[in-house]
Image (tube, rainbow, N blue to C red; front, side, top):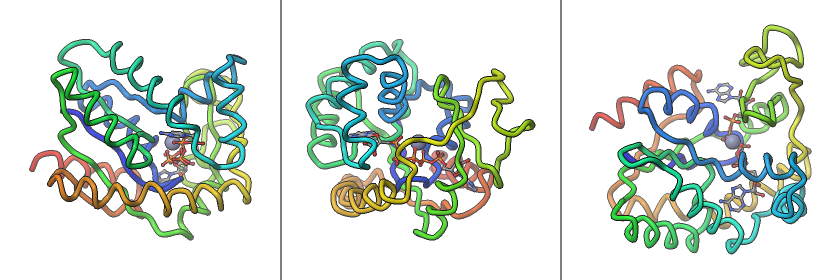
Length: 214
Ligand code: AP5
Ligand code: ZN
């Protein structure tokens, strides 16, 4: 089963993706995580992506779509695919349809995680991440055992560079202008489910699991 996690910044896409890949034996493709790894490793792609990300803008489609093809081509046959943070506009969604079709594959479900703006701000301001693994914590809602340290690897947790007030405002604007139209796009295809993301991570996960049974 191939799934897209759709939702505004801070909705909990990464948090739910971590739970879902275990449940479904799926491969997670998170464009944001791929860009952050490239930035950390000082690659040319990372240098280009960073300019856009730190301002809260979308990285150009030419760069993003190619990267998703590369990731899709590496997925072993029979594994489910979980897309987090892609597609983010109509051009990307159409490219994905075409790319999946070429690979004799398709998207089965789009999970739209609905969260109000005040919750988003609180979540993003308390987020801490391990850039090496993409593992996400929250100082209040999901704190690590030792402050600032990843429970799993012992590495340092940091605040994302695009979690500043100005970048978050821009990310929300970009979501409203370019990404939220995908709700309608996938609803018309009959594969959209909307769930309430303003619950605990476990409650959100339960809703997602139920929606996949239907
Ligand atoms: P990306 O990394 O995808 O960021 P985003 O969409 O803004 O989403 P976030 O990662 O901020 O939030 P999330 O929904 O994953 O929430 P999380 O689980 O972390 O993209 C970053 C940038 O990369 C973009 O702005 C763009 O520049 C570029 N980019 C990426 N993809 C692109 C594309 N396709 N095209 C072009 N450019 C692209 O949770 C947030 C916090 O809340 C955490 O602290 C978590 O612990 C906590 N939390 C989660 N769920 C709950 C809950 N239920 N209750 C309480 N706390 C919770
Ligand atoms: Zn994320």
